[in-house]
Length: 484
Image 1 (spheres, rainbow, N blue to C red):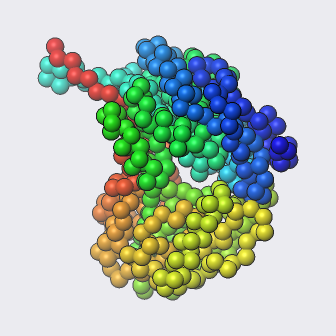
Image 2 (tube, helix red, strand yellow; image 1 turned 180 degrees about the vertical axis):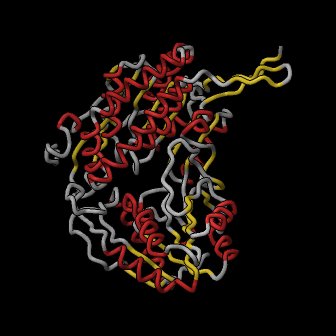
Image 3 (tube, rainbow, N blue to C red; image 1 turned 180 degrees about the horizontal axis):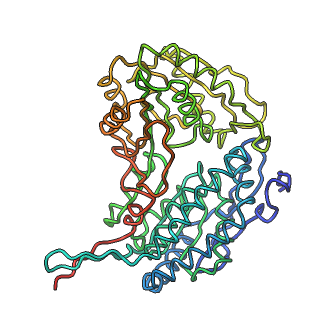
């Protein structure tokens, strides 16, 4: 097959990767089927990886199980040194990683560089320090309470942040003393191959990290239901998370789930409206809206509603769709034709439900090639409508008016999800009071920056457990009480 992509964009060595990484070696898969990797900006096939099988999962889990006792017994300082070498090897590949993500995901190169690559490198660097700390122990009466690594981890990761979502699992799992089998998304697997090139260079012990690409229906199911996997860590849709819980329940295995979101951006009447709208639009459209924490519901006090809509329209007009390698591009394509079609379906339904189209919409112009959807804003969205309740995962913003703070909180909490949110006010105490009332795992006040050491995760159907920092590290540990 002639794989299309200029060599300046995608490293040639990534185009045909026909091996798995099991037990510290690049090994041949059990089957012969391959998965085509597409450039969503053009529709061209740019790479191929193996379609792993259940037999491949068995081999990878066996390697992880064999490696677990030695890795779990490794001193914290030594585990930290391994992670430090991995950080050095991965950082040396930062440019290749950014270009690869721009090609296989369609993220603008600037975003791929500053967020998609820089953030996971920060997370890994944080865990170099966390891994070096002695295990936390405490005395309670006559008991010594200790933390021990949970065991073999099955990590199943999504396509929207193909390096960060992997690192948010691998770094704490390794720091805790666990071994891992990774199944990256079949839509963006090439980034994982660059990661495992770095793993090889860093010299991690054989079997500590293992890679089996493939589909969710085959590799994901086999990994989630495997009797020798002690914890399944999954990021993705709530539907798939539910399926993973069922598979894990058969053997009472632990799960950590980071699932969907429908986050509310609450703009109180005294807020700096210009800044709140600008940042709010940017957050909603980040990664072409393919972000679980995106503030996709903007709640604005009715007294400032019309002004906000004008500011929103102006802000959205500055988001140019186009080639991820064009410096003027601010929004790339959606990851696949299926994803683009799904988002268009949400837009068409919102129109049919009577929401007022402010900008964009089903007939807005988009590039002729690729899976593009125009940034779209709807006003007068009913809080119970599909657009206000369902995760769109595309560049679509719902704007909802409110009359007082109690109503704003009620609308914000009127969701089966609870992953993120925001509050804007010139009164810090008032903003904090609202933030405390929101049933969600994270709230940003007045555009506060993301903290990769703070716990990340959600309430309700947004998942179970937390990632990042000491709280994320704890997810990969068991508690043992030793009575003396």
